[in-house]
Amino acid sequence: MTRNSLSVADLEARALALRKRVVQMVGKIRVGYLQQGLGAADIFAAVYFGELRLREDDPDWPQRDRCLLSTAHNTALLYATFAERGLIDPALLERYTEDGSPLEVNASERLGTLVEATCGSLGQGLSVAVGMALSLRRKHLPSRVYVILGDGELQEGQVWEAALSAGGHGLGNLTMIIDRNDMQVEGHTDKVVRMDPIGAKFAAFGWNAVEIDGNSMAAVVEALGKARETADRPTVIVARTLAGAGVPFLEGQLRHVASITPEDATRAMDVLNGVAA
Amino acid sequence: MTETSIEGMGGFKDEKFYRQESLAARSYGRALLAAAKADTRIVCLGADLTQPTETYLFRDQIPERFFMLGIQEANMIGVAGGMARAGDIPFAHSFCVFITRRVYDQIAMQAAYPKLPVKLVGFIPGLATELGVSHQAIDDIALMRALPNMAVIEPSGPEQIGAALTAALDYDGPVYLRLSIARGRPDETAPLVPLELGKGLVVRQGADVAILACGSMVAEALAAAETLARRGLSATVANMASLKPFDAALAERLAREHRALITAENHSIIGGLGAAVAESLALAGVATNFAMIGVRDTFAEGGTTPYLMEKYGLAARHIAERAEALCGRAGAL
Image (cartoon, rainbow over the protein chains, first blue to last red):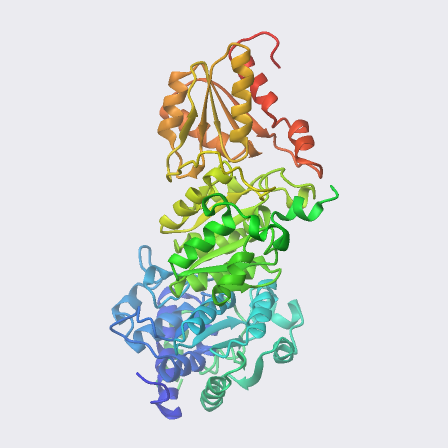
């Protein structure tokens, strides 16, 4: 699949399919990363269906683009994306978080190369992405590196070490997307540690920084395109997302780990299927 | 601190010692450079400290594969993991304490768990620094031994550095290489010492007591053996440079063949060489007269190496006195 082969409308359709998967997967186990899965579905659809050059039949292709999920826990969405993209057997989703399943709560490379690094110990993904970007650039490979961070993760000091490093090395082949959903375990991120201005902080570190509505597919696609055109600096896309986006009765509920009753899961599916709830 | 503090702390001073470097096999900087010229996958990462980590030759001769990340060790480990995932063999450098304890979780997640060929190279083991407790790595072996997939190597000195580097490269996974800062030109007449991962090496054969040592303590053990010989006790000395995988079979054999067994390490007695030997013997069901020479569950202080070795009981005489005590000799500690 090449970049930009899908229209915004096509990508929105993919995001809807991802949201349905997320509700089904979390609904089945009744508790999990529901709110951030719904919130980031547009980002994941844009990245995995619009942006990444991958080979479904050759996951180790050296010239592939890399995408790392630094938080590692938004996995209902991640695995749904892998399945919709044809990277894993959709039947595996049925065993999400079951004992013995490769689809662990936090994504691990037990699943294969498509989990480009085992993260989840927060703050480490950007460093790994910097290392990949440096190595790929040295070898003159065209691959691009994407890394998705949570906003609460920015509280980790290592993120800023890596940000200095990426800015200092002018890594134009690196794009970071910050899922600005305001959620961390403790509550609203800004009530834990004041975060803003996020983009300006990275700009001061030598990054190309853009802030967008992360639930606007057109905005996400445009930002990813501009990141690709910025060759001399890494780009950070601060994507403001709405927890529970796409399911009105869940929207705005800041629950890091959300429980959902079977009845509410059915209601949510009805909404996503366009059936009056 | 002595008047020649840069030499003392920093190993070879760039200009002064550039032309005087010894054979590649005896100098880490030379050995790494030679390895990198032969294998273009090797990249060199630094967190400041190019001079004391002997990476200036690499920096000057292969600049395209040299990455100075600045004083940010945590990021360096992640970057090393990313590079390894992209096909490189990264050698990441700092002082022992900063390349292990400071970045333990980063190592666990980005090198050990994925079993990537990330080679962690630390300088200043144990008490071998004047700076003080901030720079004294007394738990690095314990920390690295506890990580699955991690190999741990501490060569006895310049004579084993080339072999240590080769062993680190040959292992398809993460390695912690614990090195001493070069204090001067290596003795080119001393025979080179081989190193095989998972194997200890008997460097002196005796009959009464066996001393198992690693790193700079091999020399202390050999000096202790000389002392003991003068007092009528015959000591075997083994160089246990491969701390993980560990040669449990050799430890067991030496325990069976001697009246007493002593370990000697420039490290805490908790979790290091002594612990590895004790675990091996206990699991093998071997009882012996046993003692551990090392830092005894305490933080140390700044001071010259001879002063600290004496104060914390790591000198040759301490080994000899322990050996005599274990063998039931009068006049011992």
